[in-house]
Image (cartoon, rainbow, N blue to C red; front, side, top):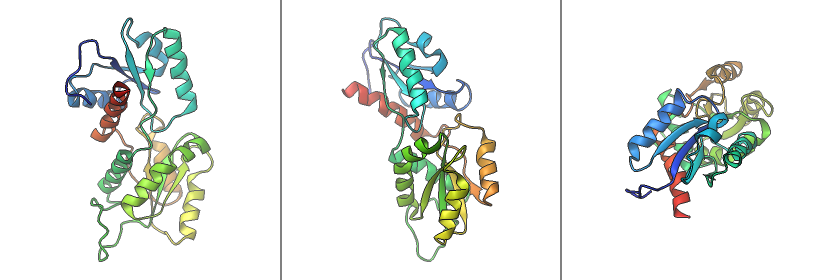
Length: 235
């Protein structure tokens, strides 16, 4: 990301499938603070067509951890309807930074060690982790790479599962426990607007496991937004 940009540089339009308050607003604020050279506009996907600047280039960054085909199609239709030359980036994941934030969120709840070094004389708080997402089998397949990255950080088995449909959390828990992992934790690979917090809480209670908080407005999420914008400038 360049430290300075010309006045006519493309606007960064952050498109959220949820509301523009709460976590989305917090992420946009972090992006602005960390990258004052970028003009950032936050909008919901439903209001995207009216939010794109007229007569100026824009880079639309979806606030998603995976390329949800339904949301990406809505964004594409909105850009086409606006008749602008806006460019849409891919979702924020999979990416090592997402695995880093997932690790941090687990550590904040005492469900993982904060460091990456596996000390042989210190037992792990859990034996296995379920990477929770929403969107069914497509979402589970899309976050597999993030699950592998998280497993590498934790040196523990990590299985991806859908929080709202099959293949679900109970099947993932059975798979891990069949392999000898008794103490489990759920790491929601969610920014925070994709599903109510109760979905994660209920899934954790059903398998008697702990759970971390969603990714939220961690600075690494804002960094991924800025990187997506910067990659378009580079091309």
